[in-house]
Length: 282
Image (cartoon, rainbow, N blue to C red; front, side):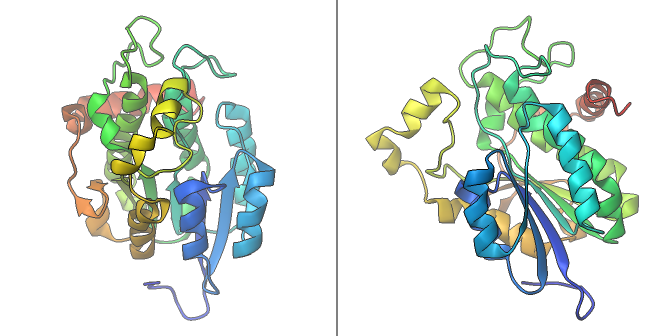
């Protein structure tokens, strides 16, 4: 692993969504004697083998409950003195008709609002690294998104097919750009990445998408979980590289296809403000 750390000093990497799929693969690949690893998942049972294989500290949190995100941040802040890489990888596609414990549309809360809150609550640990990277797992699905600051929860608009999921993934890129603008003075850099259509448990919380991903035809268009994890691993290994700041990657390629809203600074700032209000950070 490439690193500018002083001799004998470990890098601390925190990975959410690490209990299976590309998160678990990234955790196993990034683990090593020079890394202090923290893995986060929704299920302690599923997370335990990953922690055992990597020697990582493990914490559980359900991102559909913001109170658990706050408890998670407290636990991480107590466990580590610094965070060199925060990999916001937890998420998925969810039934937009449902509502989270906090009353939000689940694609909005789980894919954006929860990692927004977590990242803010561990910011002091990112600052302590004196050069850190926030890596947000996005998707080419961002092209289907539509961020409306007056209807983030899809209470007024029609939630056409993948639009709520796409909106959440678009917000991942917008959050990345928000960090890139606001926190550069603290040497906190941020990048977003579309890992590719990996054949994982993605879609398990959405009936239609789950059926599509379990179709025999899926094998013709998907990549392996190892291939999907590769771009996340590569970016995590680069770490706090200023040239990554604000960049959206499509797998290993910078400047992937993105929704025009992803570069709208007014929307980026507006989303940051609304998210801070909704999470009690404002």
